[in-house]
Length: 302
Image (cartoon, rainbow, N blue to C red; front, side, top):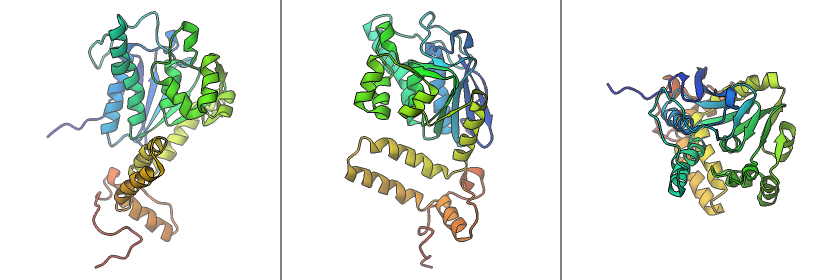
Protein backbone atom coordinates (compact mmCIF):
# COMPACT_ATOMS: atom_id res chain seq x y z
CA UNK A 1 0.00 0.00 0.00
CA UNK A 2 1.30 3.46 -0.90
CA UNK A 3 2.34 5.48 2.14
CA UNK A 4 0.21 8.57 2.68
CA UNK A 5 2.11 11.85 2.58
CA UNK A 6 1.81 13.63 5.91
CA UNK A 7 3.53 16.44 7.74
CA UNK A 8 6.11 15.23 10.24
CA UNK A 9 6.40 16.86 13.65
CA UNK A 10 9.91 17.74 14.74
CA UNK A 11 12.98 19.80 13.92
CA UNK A 12 13.81 21.10 10.46
CA UNK A 13 16.47 23.55 9.37
CA UNK A 14 15.70 26.73 11.30
CA UNK A 15 12.21 25.82 12.50
CA UNK A 16 10.12 23.27 14.36
CA UNK A 17 6.68 21.83 13.66
CA UNK A 18 3.92 20.77 16.04
CA UNK A 19 0.38 19.61 15.27
CA UNK A 20 -2.56 20.58 17.51
CA UNK A 21 -6.16 19.44 17.25
CA UNK A 22 -8.15 19.83 15.07
CA UNK A 23 -5.51 19.77 12.34
CA UNK A 24 -3.61 22.95 13.24
CA UNK A 25 0.04 22.90 12.18
CA UNK A 26 2.27 25.26 14.18
CA UNK A 27 5.55 26.23 12.52
CA UNK A 28 7.96 27.99 14.90
CA UNK A 29 11.02 29.69 13.44
CA UNK A 30 13.84 28.59 15.70
CA UNK A 31 17.02 30.62 15.17
CA UNK A 32 16.63 33.08 18.07
CA UNK A 33 20.37 33.80 18.20
CA UNK A 34 20.01 35.52 14.78
CA UNK A 35 16.46 36.86 15.35
CA UNK A 36 15.21 33.95 13.22
CA UNK A 37 16.96 35.31 10.13
CA UNK A 38 16.61 32.83 7.30
CA UNK A 39 19.02 30.73 5.27
CA UNK A 40 18.50 28.98 1.94
CA UNK A 41 18.14 25.51 3.57
CA UNK A 42 15.57 26.93 5.99
CA UNK A 43 13.50 28.32 3.11
CA UNK A 44 13.80 25.09 1.15
CA UNK A 45 12.64 23.06 4.17
CA UNK A 46 9.70 25.45 4.56
CA UNK A 47 8.70 24.94 0.92
CA UNK A 48 8.86 21.17 1.42
CA UNK A 49 6.69 21.36 4.56
CA UNK A 50 4.14 23.49 2.70
CA UNK A 51 4.00 20.91 -0.10
CA UNK A 52 3.43 18.18 2.49
CA UNK A 53 0.78 20.36 4.16
CA UNK A 54 -1.05 20.82 0.86
CA UNK A 55 -1.22 17.04 0.42
CA UNK A 56 -2.10 16.17 4.03
CA UNK A 57 -5.89 16.13 4.55
CA UNK A 58 -5.39 16.10 8.31
CA UNK A 59 -3.94 19.63 8.28
CA UNK A 60 -6.54 22.39 8.00
CA UNK A 61 -4.79 25.57 9.21
CA UNK A 62 -1.13 26.62 9.57
CA UNK A 63 0.23 29.05 12.18
CA UNK A 64 3.66 30.61 11.72
CA UNK A 65 5.44 32.26 14.64
CA UNK A 66 8.94 32.86 15.95
CA UNK A 67 10.96 31.83 18.97
CA UNK A 68 12.45 34.58 21.11
CA UNK A 69 12.14 38.29 20.33
CA UNK A 70 11.56 38.01 16.58
CA UNK A 71 9.08 36.56 14.14
CA UNK A 72 11.57 36.55 11.24
CA UNK A 73 14.14 39.32 10.88
CA UNK A 74 15.04 39.01 7.21
CA UNK A 75 17.81 36.96 5.64
CA UNK A 76 20.94 36.00 7.53
CA UNK A 77 23.52 38.15 5.75
CA UNK A 78 26.35 36.63 7.80
CA UNK A 79 25.72 33.02 6.93
CA UNK A 80 23.69 31.49 4.14
CA UNK A 81 24.52 27.95 5.16
CA UNK A 82 22.59 25.62 7.42
CA UNK A 83 22.10 21.97 8.23
CA UNK A 84 18.84 20.21 7.51
CA UNK A 85 17.72 16.97 9.05
CA UNK A 86 15.08 16.45 6.36
CA UNK A 87 16.52 17.47 2.98
CA UNK A 88 20.01 17.78 1.45
CA UNK A 89 22.11 20.95 1.46
CA UNK A 90 21.29 23.60 -1.16
CA UNK A 91 23.27 26.54 -2.51
CA UNK A 92 21.83 29.98 -1.81
CA UNK A 93 22.73 31.50 -5.17
CA UNK A 94 23.88 35.15 -5.22
CA UNK A 95 27.41 34.16 -6.31
CA UNK A 96 26.82 35.93 -9.64
CA UNK A 97 23.89 37.69 -11.38
CA UNK A 98 22.52 34.45 -12.78
CA UNK A 99 22.84 32.80 -9.36
CA UNK A 100 20.95 35.67 -7.75
CA UNK A 101 18.10 35.33 -10.25
CA UNK A 102 17.93 31.55 -9.85
CA UNK A 103 18.18 31.71 -6.07
CA UNK A 104 15.30 34.15 -5.88
CA UNK A 105 13.04 32.32 -8.32
CA UNK A 106 13.75 28.81 -7.02
CA UNK A 107 13.99 29.49 -3.27
CA UNK A 108 12.98 32.87 -1.85
CA UNK A 109 10.13 33.72 -4.20
CA UNK A 110 9.05 30.08 -4.31
CA UNK A 111 8.43 30.21 -0.55
CA UNK A 112 6.04 33.17 -0.66
CA UNK A 113 4.36 31.63 -3.69
CA UNK A 114 3.95 28.34 -1.80
CA UNK A 115 2.22 29.96 1.17
CA UNK A 116 -0.07 32.02 -1.09
CA UNK A 117 -0.94 28.95 -3.19
CA UNK A 118 -1.57 26.77 -0.14
CA UNK A 119 -5.25 25.78 -0.07
CA UNK A 120 -5.24 25.61 3.71
CA UNK A 121 -5.54 28.95 5.52
CA UNK A 122 -2.42 30.43 7.09
CA UNK A 123 -1.91 32.70 10.10
CA UNK A 124 1.20 34.76 10.88
CA UNK A 125 1.45 35.22 14.66
CA UNK A 126 3.94 38.10 14.64
CA UNK A 127 5.68 38.03 18.01
CA UNK A 128 8.49 40.55 17.43
CA UNK A 129 10.60 41.76 14.53
CA UNK A 130 9.17 40.94 11.08
CA UNK A 131 11.62 42.60 8.74
CA UNK A 132 12.27 42.33 5.00
CA UNK A 133 11.94 38.61 4.12
CA UNK A 134 9.96 37.95 7.29
CA UNK A 135 7.67 40.92 6.60
CA UNK A 136 6.88 39.81 3.04
CA UNK A 137 6.27 36.26 4.26
CA UNK A 138 3.79 37.54 6.85
CA UNK A 139 2.02 39.58 4.14
CA UNK A 140 1.75 36.41 2.04
CA UNK A 141 -0.19 34.68 4.84
CA UNK A 142 -3.99 34.91 4.95
CA UNK A 143 -4.27 36.30 8.47
CA UNK A 144 -1.87 38.33 10.61
CA UNK A 145 -2.08 38.79 14.36
CA UNK A 146 0.61 40.98 15.94
CA UNK A 147 1.78 41.27 19.52
CA UNK A 148 1.95 44.76 21.00
CA UNK A 149 5.76 44.60 20.90
CA UNK A 150 5.90 43.60 17.22
CA UNK A 151 7.93 45.70 14.78
CA UNK A 152 7.55 45.23 11.05
CA UNK A 153 8.57 46.73 7.75
CA UNK A 154 10.61 46.25 4.60
CA UNK A 155 13.50 48.71 4.90
CA UNK A 156 15.51 46.92 2.20
CA UNK A 157 16.74 50.31 0.97
CA UNK A 158 18.71 50.69 4.20
CA UNK A 159 21.03 48.09 2.67
CA UNK A 160 20.69 49.32 -0.91
CA UNK A 161 18.62 46.22 -1.70
CA UNK A 162 15.20 45.50 -3.19
CA UNK A 163 12.20 43.62 -1.70
CA UNK A 164 13.05 40.74 -3.97
CA UNK A 165 10.67 38.11 -2.55
CA UNK A 166 7.67 40.03 -3.95
CA UNK A 167 7.25 42.35 -0.99
CA UNK A 168 6.47 45.35 -3.20
CA UNK A 169 3.56 43.50 -4.88
CA UNK A 170 2.18 42.25 -1.57
CA UNK A 171 2.41 45.69 0.02
CA UNK A 172 0.55 47.30 -2.89
CA UNK A 173 -2.23 44.72 -2.43
CA UNK A 174 -2.61 45.79 1.20
CA UNK A 175 -1.94 49.53 1.06
CA UNK A 176 -2.40 50.68 -2.54
CA UNK A 177 0.29 52.30 -4.67
CA UNK A 178 0.58 55.67 -2.90
CA UNK A 179 0.88 54.31 0.64
CA UNK A 180 3.16 51.46 -0.46
CA UNK A 181 5.44 54.01 -2.16
CA UNK A 182 5.66 56.04 1.06
CA UNK A 183 6.15 52.95 3.24
CA UNK A 184 8.99 51.46 1.21
CA UNK A 185 10.81 54.55 -0.04
CA UNK A 186 10.93 56.02 3.48
CA UNK A 187 12.09 52.68 4.93
CA UNK A 188 9.36 52.61 7.54
CA UNK A 189 9.37 50.21 10.48
CA UNK A 190 6.06 50.30 12.36
CA UNK A 191 4.74 48.84 15.59
CA UNK A 192 1.74 46.54 15.88
CA UNK A 193 -0.81 49.28 16.53
CA UNK A 194 0.36 51.35 13.55
CA UNK A 195 0.35 48.23 11.36
CA UNK A 196 -3.24 47.62 12.44
CA UNK A 197 -4.24 51.18 11.59
CA UNK A 198 -2.67 50.76 8.14
CA UNK A 199 -4.50 47.48 7.58
CA UNK A 200 -1.35 45.35 7.54
CA UNK A 201 -2.50 43.13 10.43
CA UNK A 202 -5.98 42.01 11.43
CA UNK A 203 -5.54 42.18 15.19
CA UNK A 204 -3.11 43.34 17.90
CA UNK A 205 -3.00 41.53 21.23
CA UNK A 206 -0.85 41.63 24.40
CA UNK A 207 2.39 39.70 24.02
CA UNK A 208 1.30 36.93 26.40
CA UNK A 209 -1.97 36.45 24.48
CA UNK A 210 -0.51 36.07 20.99
CA UNK A 211 -0.49 32.29 20.64
CA UNK A 212 -3.81 31.93 22.45
CA UNK A 213 -5.37 34.37 19.97
CA UNK A 214 -3.76 32.61 17.00
CA UNK A 215 -4.97 29.20 18.18
CA UNK A 216 -8.48 30.51 18.80
CA UNK A 217 -8.63 31.83 15.24
CA UNK A 218 -7.08 28.64 13.84
CA UNK A 219 -9.63 26.41 15.59
CA UNK A 220 -12.47 28.63 14.40
CA UNK A 221 -11.23 28.33 10.82
CA UNK A 222 -10.56 24.60 11.17
CA UNK A 223 -14.19 24.01 12.13
CA UNK A 224 -15.54 25.59 8.97
CA UNK A 225 -16.41 23.77 5.72
CA UNK A 226 -12.91 23.11 4.44
CA UNK A 227 -13.54 22.55 0.73
CA UNK A 228 -15.66 25.69 0.41
CA UNK A 229 -13.15 27.74 2.42
CA UNK A 230 -10.21 26.56 0.32
CA UNK A 231 -12.04 27.37 -2.89
CA UNK A 232 -13.08 30.76 -1.52
CA UNK A 233 -9.47 31.57 -0.62
CA UNK A 234 -8.47 31.05 -4.26
CA UNK A 235 -11.43 33.09 -5.49
CA UNK A 236 -10.53 36.01 -3.21
CA UNK A 237 -6.94 36.03 -4.48
CA UNK A 238 -8.13 35.82 -8.08
CA UNK A 239 -10.73 38.56 -7.61
CA UNK A 240 -7.99 41.21 -7.53
CA UNK A 241 -6.81 40.14 -10.98
CA UNK A 242 -9.98 39.09 -12.85
CA UNK A 243 -12.63 41.18 -14.57
CA UNK A 244 -16.18 41.21 -13.18
CA UNK A 245 -17.42 38.67 -15.73
CA UNK A 246 -14.37 36.43 -15.25
CA UNK A 247 -14.88 36.53 -11.48
CA UNK A 248 -18.55 35.56 -11.83
CA UNK A 249 -17.69 32.65 -14.09
CA UNK A 250 -14.89 31.50 -11.78
CA UNK A 251 -17.08 31.47 -8.64
CA UNK A 252 -19.94 29.78 -10.55
CA UNK A 253 -17.62 26.93 -11.55
CA UNK A 254 -16.56 26.43 -7.94
CA UNK A 255 -20.14 26.64 -6.69
CA UNK A 256 -21.07 23.83 -9.08
CA UNK A 257 -18.80 21.69 -6.92
CA UNK A 258 -19.46 22.99 -3.39
CA UNK A 259 -23.28 22.99 -3.68
CA UNK A 260 -23.21 19.22 -4.10
CA UNK A 261 -20.78 18.27 -1.34
CA UNK A 262 -21.74 16.77 2.03
CA UNK A 263 -20.83 20.02 3.80
CA UNK A 264 -23.57 21.86 1.89
CA UNK A 265 -26.11 19.20 2.87
CA UNK A 266 -24.99 19.41 6.48
CA UNK A 267 -25.16 23.21 6.47
CA UNK A 268 -28.68 23.22 5.07
CA UNK A 269 -29.86 20.50 7.49
CA UNK A 270 -28.34 22.29 10.48
CA UNK A 271 -30.11 25.53 9.52
CA UNK A 272 -33.49 23.80 9.18
CA UNK A 273 -32.99 21.85 12.43
CA UNK A 274 -31.72 24.96 14.29
CA UNK A 275 -28.47 23.38 15.39
CA UNK A 276 -24.77 24.01 14.87
CA UNK A 277 -23.42 22.48 11.68
CA UNK A 278 -20.90 19.65 11.97
CA UNK A 279 -18.84 20.13 8.84
CA UNK A 280 -15.99 18.05 7.42
CA UNK A 281 -17.49 14.61 7.90
CA UNK A 282 -15.63 13.55 4.74
CA UNK A 283 -12.34 14.49 6.42
CA UNK A 284 -13.17 12.65 9.62
CA UNK A 285 -14.62 9.55 7.96
CA UNK A 286 -18.21 10.28 9.03
CA UNK A 287 -19.61 10.75 5.49
CA UNK A 288 -18.72 9.83 1.94
CA UNK A 289 -17.58 12.70 -0.32
CA UNK A 290 -20.38 12.01 -2.79
CA UNK A 291 -21.47 14.62 -5.33
CA UNK A 292 -24.55 12.72 -6.53
CA UNK A 293 -27.99 14.25 -6.50
CA UNK A 294 -29.39 17.79 -6.36
CA UNK A 295 -28.25 20.64 -4.13
CA UNK A 296 -29.53 20.18 -0.55
CA UNK A 297 -32.31 22.78 -0.85
CA UNK A 298 -33.70 21.16 -4.00
CA UNK A 299 -36.27 18.31 -3.81
CA UNK A 300 -34.96 14.89 -4.75
CA UNK A 301 -36.53 13.97 -8.10
CA UNK A 302 -37.01 10.42 -6.84
